[in-house]
Image (cartoon, rainbow, N blue to C red; front, side, top):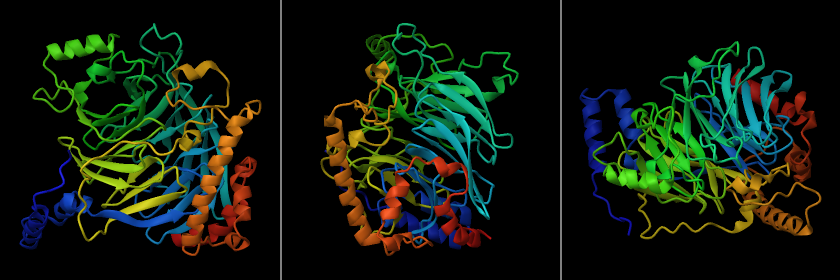
Amino acid sequence: MMKNKRARTSVDKAVVDVWHREVGELSTRNFAHRLAASEDLVLRLDIYKKLAKHQGCVNTVSFNADGNILVSGSDDKRVILWDWETGHAKLAFQPGHVNNVFQAKIMPHTDDRSLVTCAADGQVRHAQILERGVETRLLAKHQGRTHKLAIEPGSPHIFYTCGEDGLVQHIDLRTGAATELFTCHPIDDGRAYMPFIHLNAIAIDPRNPNLFAVAGLDEYTRLYDIRKYKWDGSTDFGQPTDYFCPLHLIGDEQVGITGLAFSDQSELLVSYNDEFIYLFTRDMGVGPNPVPSSPLSACIEANEMGLDHSAMSADEKAIPQVYKGHRNRETVKGVSFFGPKSEYVVSGSDCGRIFIWKKKGGELVRVMEADKYVVNSIESHPHTTVLASCGIESDIKIWTPKAIEKAILPEKIEQVPRPALFRLLSFAAFNEDEDDDDEYNFFDVDDYDNEEDDNEEDDTDDDFDDVCDDIDDDDDDDDDDDYNYDDDDDDDGGGDDDSDCNDDGDDGDDSNDRAKKSLGSYNDAND
């Protein structure tokens, strides 16, 4: 049974901190950090606004460096830039993808005018916001869905991508060149059914941007050092400098990894499907040449060493911190740190809720209802106690500590997934090929892009569309007046939006007409 009572110490501590600041014993910066990391604020998080303009599942949200703009990407193949404080959509455009947008990020130090995107069509694209419109170009292509990209910290030019083809690419916007670094392969020759690792996640260490990690449909997170790559291609760069995996999962062919995140202290957060979230420090790796073994033998070895997999033991170097309570099975969910010094860990869940744990100790402190079906992505504001979340619903939730009463945990938290219609959505439903990938695709969904499939799938799609239409209708009734663009499209009853959302995106390589209509106000706001 979860705790539902807390010692009332957070307010007292806050009062002491205010007094220390007033008498000069606590700097303004440290006071702000302590306040932002306060559990009292976390317990008061509540929905501040719902940003409703997308016409499909929202797969990604990301703040710019200043934190005043939020960018989102959706199944409707659009990217929208929001003034999240007012709820106003500053700019919406088609980046040129012909399938669901999985990630969109603003490049730093570009006056918020340079964005990179990746999608289910395998394309990696660049969008440049100009005075005359939005211009997009194709930078790279993966042979399969491309879920994530990672921007080199502080760089307006360099980022990395990974895809379900196992390929990792390095892209420089100054030249527009994409360098194929390596293809990720299993370490165990016995997995002949998996010629390469389907990659779901990539992250760069902010403390040492030479290091980046990738992970996907096996149990290992692989850490690489870009300094070991020879740009003339004279060496094989495919060998990681280290591997990370909980000992009891080594050799487990049923697990995969959906999300990665680095903290400012170089800690590595890894989210497993149908398992838990683990926090690794740099000394917890299993080395550059891990020995394949079965989960049973790994557990026996761990038990002989006296390790406890459920919590941090005295031997902190040997066992990662674990975070439990959520469910990560149906979609490719991210995982994030929260707080000015990464004091918390946050994740979405198949039950439609956000889970927040204390990083140190793994205590679950908050569970929040955030989606009717599944929460896929949660983004922390870079400077203050604000979260943005998105999932199967077509809106984005902004969370701020505005609640009068502090929340308490439910006495019983059941990880019951919502109706199975979301299995047709977003990350899992867009296998355009008919290869024999299904035997190691842990999302357990059917393809429905193949026109030769029987009508049963089409009926399911219709059911899903009906549900989404109901959701959109409800949102439109509540929020249309608050979220009008600068153009007049919404005055036409929304019909134009639907057609634009479902086109092939072929006009994305040139200035986008819809983007031009709202570009004037975006340029004015950024001048």
